[in-house]
Length: 466
Image (tube, rainbow, N blue to C red; front, side, top):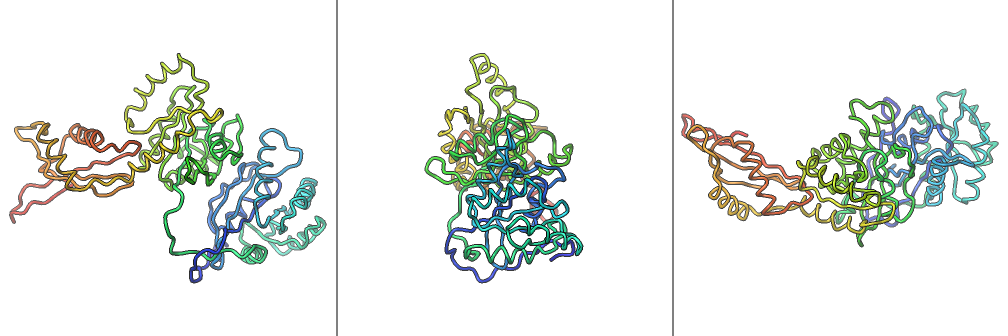
């Protein structure tokens, strides 16, 4: 363990090909017993959103974990309660789905409170699942509380396993015990073969329908959906087959404010969303077609663009759009989305399923553009014809010349123009626009930078500067 009690993951043993599916551990319990804190301890990093308020976790959220060279998946769940209603019932249902798909269930109880009626009801539900259950007595921060933990024998799940998720007490022993209960997991493969499913981030402001779209694509309830904004807090990863191909979709928290102005759960959720966009290859930005494009929408579009990710803009809730709204929406698109005309746009409805089948082709087109590389010869042949037809304007009696260009990288495509002097910003934008007209890049940002050659120095050799 590290000095602050966090478990350091041990180096994996010699890798072999995986021998089967990765086993799954579901962490369940009533609200505010420390499930997400325990999940962070088990996976060895602070990833699940934690706050001293019940109900922060709402969906079932999987995280990759490894211990002593073995890999498994830890699924964090929302607080389970019997006879829950409305959103709480949906959260409880997600927890029960996690239990049904798990190989082992970790049932977390707050030692400082002891066994409650809700805990006893949860035990009855767990017995019906017929899954192996490990009873974890959490918040055992000292030896005195370890004695208190023995009272949890009364739940009838066997010996309680005392831990302090917050301080790390007993975490290593708990991980060893989990591996004892799990089916034999595959060894970690350090030499992966072909690339796995493409990563797609679903982003947008609260209540635009991100979780509804995920559920529609998955053909099941993967995420809690509620008309109250802000239901999703943690990014929810799901492997979903769309258009005959498996994609890894990440449902993210709705962004209300700038990260610097957010606080508490919202602050950490904003960081998770930004991290999910960075980790993705393409982002689907959902906008509510029935409402005006807002400043929040603009900030999210800017975040995706600045991250350099491929982009599909999905105007959701199209079933609520009438003729008048379409007229004004067209004008808003011309005005508000003028700086990103390259983004692929779709009109769909997660609720009715309208045009959802067009999402996979749009994602493929955006990713193909994002990964496009133009051969240097072809690029310079095109560029020579362009600057001959439309040379740079003369400034001060002289005009800089574009000598040649090269594509420095892909994902997103980045181009460098080598010139005899700085280019006007307007001419640089002109080259970028013509580059798109010639080679496409629909759905992907591109970057065009200039390296201008300095005048000849005393040694007679020119130097470049950017």
